[in-house]
Image (cartoon, rainbow, N blue to C red; front, side, top):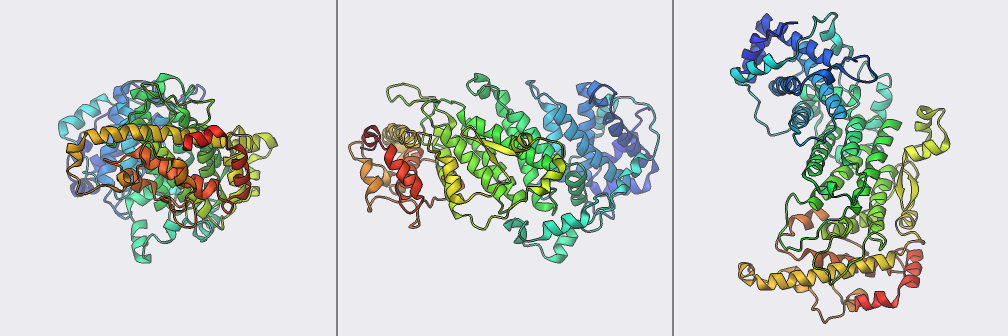
Length: 580
């Protein structure tokens, strides 16, 4: 098939309105689009060798040309309504989404040059993320012509490829290709399965149906319902975040940081999709993907990183990126599963993994060491976020259970152990079934098992944060010239204890500073703390939060009596010395 796409090149160099006019009035543009669609379909065909696809035999330059042209077509189509969208245009954008997903799934992400992967993620953002503030990608004629010259040459396509999109007759919520359309519609609309932010999204009926008539929603629907992108993107995130050895210096390489950046972008795509598309297929593939990424991300909390003690927030630092990934994933989980036991269990597994990473078998703090390289779990913003997550678990009530029988039909023939491990997450070397409903008391036992040295670990954390906080305070005092710009002393400075003061009094004194509320263990939002952390002593802020947690939660007879008894029995003289 000769790649004579001159008419398409000319159309893509025009604004969206002119592009649509040419699409409707110029048969040559339609034929060129048919040709490009055929190229996409051919690249996604099996090559006959295992699960290899045809595009895997193409060069990087050829794939880059395809992704760039697909980006331009998708960008020019965003403003169209469903009525304006020509069938070939719909088919191209849908197949471009599939092409991008398949390429990312087949990619190794090991090269220093990840330009094509970046292009593919940008293609997904353009195609399915509504409300993005982006300038329409108008290709210059010379650029488009160069890309066309790079396209692979394939045989003429046969068959009604362009008509494939018509198999999905989307009318409102219902889709002809979805056998359980009414079932998923009812399940999604049921208040008990719909997340809180969806119920109060502010959409009026008229506005919502106007949104359903947009080209972007058509692409979103295809991506979620037909492209199954939700479990695929989550599994891809798990693949990118997988670390063979958390103590390997490769985990701190620039390549791995770029991987984390990709993960963050994909999670944001998912968050947008799950918020906009009123459909979630709660099947075993989704549960396995969520469980896999939860375990993979939990493993990262043990990665050791040099602790840079500074009062200025370092944007883009390794610890801040990992924290953003965790928070974005939790957001996606809550959008997907709403106020359910699944979301609660995943949150509890993260907390348990972070506390497990505090164990002395992983790292021991040495005050005399010139450089400290603790696990990420020791970093102040992780500590504050973790305490907030525990508080959220305490607040959650009336979780909606997901019935295990809903998933058993998909796992016929699998053993009980295989079933348990496939949709379970690891916490303290034990499995936590995501579908099981736990009470708050049971979750606390999972987070602080009787076999763990939780008090010793928390005291080591307090020692580390306090010591590093005092070091930082000295730096801040030496930088008085910059602090003079501040109108008055900050709340954090008022709260800093002098080195000769006993923090033990803060722990048990009724008049000690309490960041939490009167009901115990109330923490301020982690996002607010992070955003306001500039020019603040974050280690001291974190240790104050930690001591308040110990006082109002761990050593409270009302918060969790069994934990109180266990904590008192494990409190040693060394722990008291640390507090004093």
